[in-house]
Length: 206
Image (cartoon, rainbow, N blue to C red; front, side):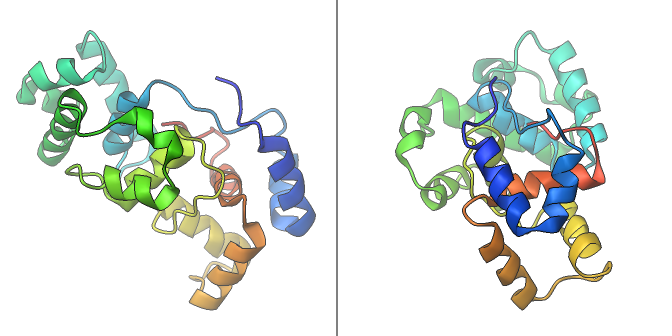
């Protein structure tokens, strides 16, 4: 999939405002945010990745894609819960991914309407699914919807990068966070992606 059409403009504007991002971006030539898969598999992958490292999530996802003929709602819904757990999913994540599958199968989630919805409205709709909290919804907005101005403050990787680059390893207070948020708008998704890159050169994908 092609990178977002706003990527070069966003990177240039952020680099001009923020020397931290300018330095990180200079080492990321050719790397951009990219999406893969469809809406269901992207959400399912976000559930898999909750509270575990990127590498651990990749391992579980590989086992799932090997064990199942396809990562689709009907396939997940029919698959035995114990077999899903054998791929590395916790009991709760099995419940969540099956609930997600049912929301797609019965039409409770309507992807055709999502491009017209605001970030907040789409987050509200997605978080009605069990196991999808704000973080998972925000990952979906960044990695599938390619929304440019999502600021996932609960993300542990983002928090670590903010501490490292902007406050000598200490947590940032509300005032500093607000200042950064204002500095990065309307490209906070892009800034967040560069924060992740500063910790791990392997691009995050969901």
